[in-house]
Image (cartoon, rainbow, N blue to C red; front, side, top):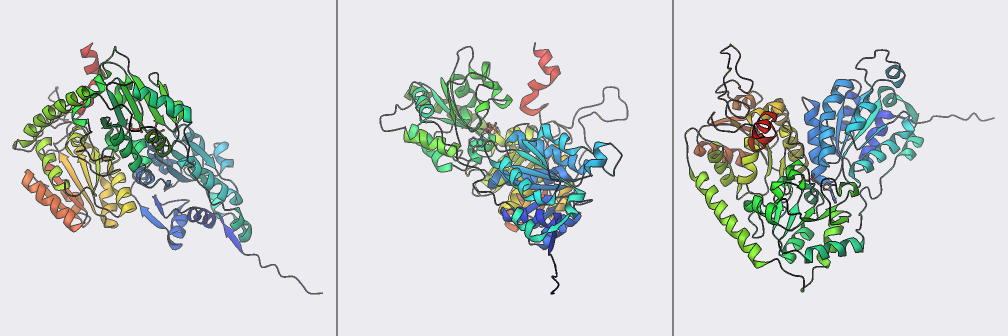
Length: 571
Ligand code: ADP
């Protein structure tokens, strides 16, 4: 009798995770290695994947999140257990808040030990910790479930309203061996991960009716509209209707900021005076004063049309007269189809009043920008940057800070969609280097990060990462010696400086030089112009220390009203 030899080929959790991601078109992982995921990163690279290693997980997570925003594919962040996971969780929560698709994959301790709290190395109940901050959270316990786990994570991240997903991979799972053929068959290639969601015809008709009844209509474009990559349809909506529009910060460039219908330079006027506002992928959160109060010209109520993929967003702050639920591309196309030749044009008086406000505000801004104070202030430094960037609309602009954020948002015009990446929905500091690296790795394009000195501090160590991968990233640090400004004093006269003050005259440029990049100190607009031009021409990692008057800058930038003390004083 012949003996049967069973030489079964085996695979394991490590290989199945790599195979599952690759099968779904993932090509890059952002992360930071350590127990138990180092070998996963090694294998990923060995199998042809790109692994971008960071110095802190939060920035790897932010890079993954912005990659997700730019590509509509979930950005992947890989971390170790407990502390690494928690560092990544900040970015996951921020991605969820901003509707960016991202998957945080963390190694973890064994459930048996975690659940009995027996004190493992880096023990933590990560799945439960992640749940409240993620759109979805999953754990895989068996190697044959990895394919399904990855598929669920991808679909949850990108379908409907995008968001952050947590995927928990216990160390034992990664080493689990199973039959290779069984493993192969368990993998899932996700079909149509973000299905189109077509709006109902009656919802579209209702929205068009509300719009027809408007005397002073306004379109408000949010970063959901930018994310949707429905650029041509959105342009058609604006241009066919003739309605003035306002872009939210990250929607700048969806239509060029110098577009005749942009009402940016008349923002307060149009928000207060419009009678019908159509929100397209924008939420009525704090950034829009919750749709209420003086900003919106209350007590006169406005009528809102809201185009969004998430039905629960509707009526979140004020009553919405006409919700249009669906993906932005489909919704906007349906609306455009309903705007025929007979569609009423916005009132000429309304357009004239906006044009007048725009011209007045633009002249005022031009006057402020023409000044050349010594040392530089935010305006003169931003004028220099604006002029260098003007002929290069393809450059990605990352922007964070307080005053640096507020002023750059209005001074630096964007002319292409999804080129402005900033503090987003939470208005947070710390996204700078993560976003810069994510954008540059994903697109291969030049990035200019305009950073407040305080904001830069949160992710500054990632200049080493930028140098290590030789990325075309130029960081401009607006150095005014402190948070908001550098002039506060300790009222007791004690030896500690005031809470807002940093080392005076710091040379951030030398941080870049320490890792082989280019550092420049710029004390005048001319020096800043020269250094930025040089950085862009060379494509080399560069940090420009822009010396700003330490007395320039206001407390909390434009959101000083949110400081409890100033708010109390106002009462
Ligand atoms: P902004 O801060 O620019 O106002 P938000 O992030 O507050 O923008 O709002 C984005 C909105 O866009 C969210 O309510 C989200 O549900 C929605 N959104 C995101 N992607 C899409 C999409 N593809 N189609 C429709 N709506 C979307």
